Length: 309
Image 1 (spheres, rainbow, N blue to C red):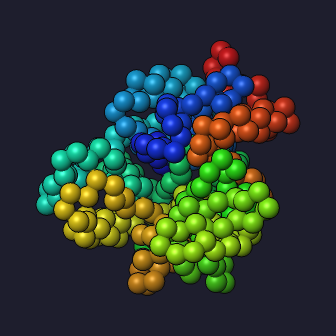
Image 2 (cartoon, rainbow, N blue to C red):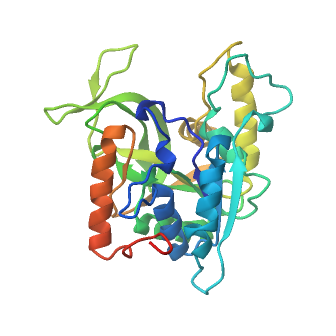
């Protein structure tokens, strides 16, 4: 099984710096290192990193450092592959408008690995902490997916994924009989001082959200056959963009929602007892560092994930 880590997003709400390579562990570990460590413990034997060009030097050092020492349960080195998400991987029929610098979203990011991933794979964000159990759960589910037409996701509760420092975007999910029935990409979700969580959509009045609603945090499980469906969806997305669009993104939750409703994909919903946390804003960093320190102190992780400290 392969773990695909998306690390090429701009993280515009984070401010200065690159949150995907922000040191938050006791020895300066980045969240990607925890994901890799947990995935390998769960049984994954290959890690594919989707990066942007300006982080290549840092990632190469990481690959030759702590990631190079990862070992599968039977003692073999873990295969590490880096792929750059840039405009060169866009289809020939599409021309990038002048002034566009923003990547074309998580569906495009995932398609960037189609030539190096030929086995069932999980997809995650580089700036999120998902928990060790989540990797074990999705690893077992990936082993049992049909080669075509099936996928899976690890779901989390909305109340555990908001930030007190500003709004977030979440894919709010509706589940039926253990499978995903609908994903609604919901923007400007705010955790209010009175404990209410609401969506502050620009086009309508704010409305409350169920704090226990199931949400996608981009922890998906797919088979290689899904790349064909992704490519078709992404090409249609590009064809539908307005000329000169500088911000439009093709995201995994809406894509998955469309494939479910068209009957092309069935997505099993997986549950994890671990708590998600991540860094949407720079102000989230101290809390993430505190939570990671607690996990090290509790023995979930060794003193450091870094070789030679």
